[in-house]
Length: 110
Length: 115
Image (cartoon, rainbow over all chains, first blue to last red; front, side, top):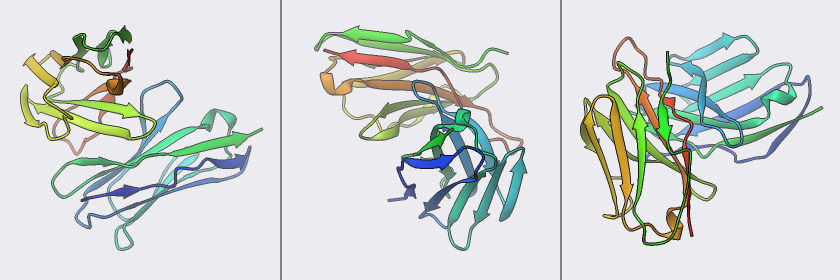
């Protein structure tokens, strides 16, 4: 069974530091990779997508993809209390199905 | 542009009652997904439609669950009869095909409590 693994956390990071969120996936034929953010009581919202190996930066967010290691990460620079949320990794597999991780709860401490 | 619309936002019902959840996808989106989210099981895909046709319903937990999409702008998820273990947040999401864009856009969810 195809899987997407994330550490459930909580991951506690001081305000202003870099938060690093990690995700591994089992299907080597996976095509596309997404990071969604979900605030408590709200719906998931897309914050980053990445399709090729390397880094993709968008403001304070950087997604990193390493297909050889089947690993995708999300870095949040200058972490703010408003970044406190659950971050969901989602992977579009070789059957064009979106497989979801269980999410990592991130807490930014002021 | 309006996002995905779901109704009701909250539903409290008693065991054995029928529950109907409604979803209006984003205009122009040809895929529609129904998810269920609980603390224990996380986000689970129940069923998805492409151009109003159900493609994969393998995530539907039991025959008590059914989903329909009579047209491109409306879908329902029905639970009959409901049970306490169905208590969860049910999300509807939609996306469009093509342009390298596979982002799913989620509605606000329906919080269901079955007593």
